[in-house]
Amino acid sequence: MYSASDVKELREKTGAGMMDCKNALQACEGNMDKAIDWLREKGMAKAAKKESRIAAEGITKILVKGDKAVILEVNSETDFVAKNEEFVNFVDKLAEVIINSNVKTDDMESALNLSMDGVLLSEALVNIIAKIGEKISFRRFTVLEKTDSQVFGAYSHMGGKIGVLVLLDGTNEEVAKDIAMHVAAMHPEYLSSDLVPSDVLEREKEIMTEQLINEGKPKDRIANILVGKVNKYYQEVCLLDQIFIKAENKETVEQYASNNNCSVKEMVRYEVGEGIEKKQEDFAAEVMSQINS
Image 1 (cartoon, rainbow, N blue to C red):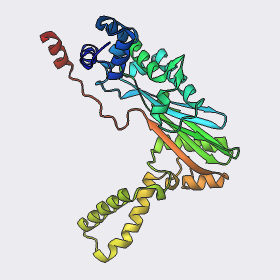
Image 2 (tube, rainbow, N blue to C red):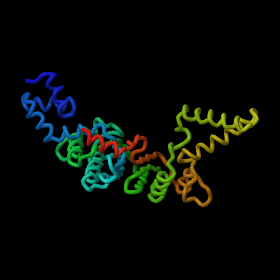
Image 3 (spheres, rainbow, N blue to C red):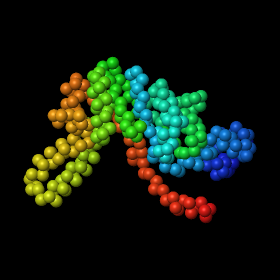
Image 4 (cartoon, rainbow, N blue to C red):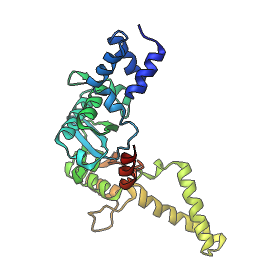
């Protein structure tokens, strides 16, 4: 019906994925022109051409439903699209699909095989890319579950540019919300000091030691000074060791929670585009390339 060279040719003509090209040729009984139309109708050709673009804008979304909560990040190329009603509605539906399923945190393969509006989520993603005209990426998600003696704290900042979800032992919703706001503002990297990876801690200690040597500190005092510097490092990067932003008496987040009969069990903080290298646009060069092409 069709050969490997036909698949290769279709990929080159449309930029669609190999499996999509195979499906198109099979559906169209090997007819190349019909297969191209088939891919275009499903938005696959158009979407595939956008895969090389960088999507570092977008929004985070938090949805809490009963004893389950999900936080996710969906990226777009521009902030303008991130505010588009159709894009926002897609993200809202996506959160509903995830929370109503049994997929586990960051199991993207299973998530993309879930159903949304009667099609696979992977296909729904292709469709929204084709419709909006930008690369859109479902980047990550975390699913948390709680017991009756626990509570979620959720906070969304700057229209979803930062999203925070925390899980507390205890049932004080106000405390949970306050701690979520603290996480958004103070950007802790770890929940507690015991969760700091050993290689990260050793690297920090090496840097601290070199700093102390360069400052001329006596070698026999460095070990003791290092203890204090490590504790200060924990106060900077570990949620439970940080001074609570609303505290008037310098109590830590751990102490604040404890004083309200709570303890923090989990923390998730998503900031849109963090870790994605944004493309630096040279618009003059882009215009010239269009003129010369």
